[in-house]
Length: 59
Ligand SMILES: [Zn+2]
Image (tube, rainbow, N blue to C red; front, side, top):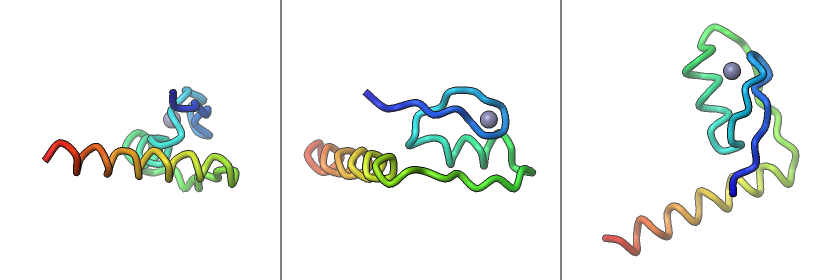
């Protein structure tokens, strides 16, 4: 299950993987840099890898 992190702008809990997208889409005027801990970045990368693997498997 994806870890949630509160958005630095609105405080809404967003999954780590989507936090960057959330900030760009919902708060396009906010100059917020989403800072992730090293282990959080690893989790996002692992989720992206898993997604790529499942995309290849289904083709
Ligand atoms: Zn937000």
